[in-house]
Structures are given as C-alpha cells and as structure tokens.
Length: 269
Image (cartoon, rainbow, N blue to C red; front, side, top):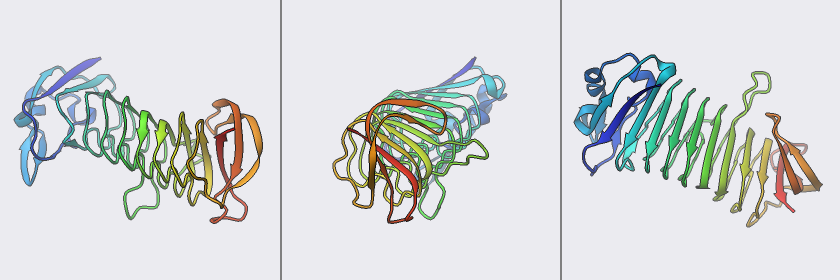
C-alpha cells in the first residue's frame, strides 16, 4: 500500500478546513500537486503545503493510505466524502472527520470532536478514544443521518449519537455504531440504526425511535416511560446477522411515535 505522510508544521490558532485531505483527492497525484490542494484557514484560502510537510508516494485509490501526525484537534473535515483508501490519524482530530464518507477506512488514534462520521454512507470509522456530540448524526435540517457503514468508538460518545439513522433492508444497508458508553439521546429519531454500547448510557435512549435496535450492556440512567417491557432474552440477533449473548431486558418503543413499533431496546438485566 502506497503511503503519503502529512506532518503538521506548527500548532494551529484557528480551525483549518481540510476537506481536500482524502485518498480520492491524493490518488495518482505527485507530491507537488498534493501540496497545492486547497485548505481554508479562518477566512483565507491556503494550500496543504502551507501547513503540512508532505512525503511518500501515491498510487491508485484502492492502495492509498494517508498518515497524519501533529496536533490535529483544530483540523476539520478530514476524509469528507471519501470513497476508498485509508486515513490514519496519530492523535486527536477536529470536527467532521469522515463526514459523509462513502467507503474506505479512517482510524483515529485519539479523541474526535463533534460530528464525527456525520451522515456516513459507507466505510468504517474507528476512534480509539472518545468522540464528541452527534456521532453519525444528521445535520440540522436533514431527516436522514447515517445510512450504512460502521462507526466504532472505544470510549464515550457525546449527545445525540446516530440521530436520524436509517437502514434499508432491500439494499442491505445497516448503519451500525459500537461504543464504550454514551451520553443522552442516543439513537434519537432512529429509523433502522443498530447501536451496541459496551457500558452505561445516559437518559432518553431511543427517543422517538420508530424502528431499529439498541443494545446497552451496562445501565441506563433513566428510561423513557414510553418504552414497554416485553420480557427477558439471552440472545439478540442484529440485522447484519451478528449475535449478542447475555441476560437482557427487552423493551419495545418509542410508543409515543407508533402504537405498534418495531423499535427494540435491550438493557443488561
């Protein structure tokens, strides 16, 4: 696999909009061409070469890997709409990483800011730390959020993760979020998303859920009264065929949305 390394030259004072940093944009280009790709620093247009030392070599998209080093906590929109290849980020990263990505893989070896994997359409986003609010969520004004692919967050996700997720059984598209723990309103407005939480979750899980599956292996600080207990189960089969075993209380809801709902919430018994 061909690798391009981007090393941040200096610590940033203002946010850097860097949606041009994708394997799609780098594939087949020379180092000089990559350095000239546009970024935006504050209200000024600049280039990748103004902020990063660029080294390595490129190839076709399927064999492209971008490795990023430095304090990237103010670098936004890395991997936006990418369709293939790999991005590895060695440290923390700013907002909108993997925004609307369609394929490929992004690995963040640190924490991610808000809107990580927003409206993800495919591929895999791995965050080996915590993530901010709105992971995999729909942007304000949109009714459809994450529609396919996988997001894995080792630590905690912030508020309103997987907001307005939507699956498609016919197209075999199953948006899935795995995380260590979660803040409030996880899976709000869920329309087919699958969420697995290894630990605890805060209030209002599955608010306004019409259908979908949420599995909490720890505790929920406060369940909505519009969820109804159906019984207890020892195995859960997810839409993608994966099976989870253990002792869980099965609840249906949110019944404030539909009298008869296919939404399911499983909480460790």
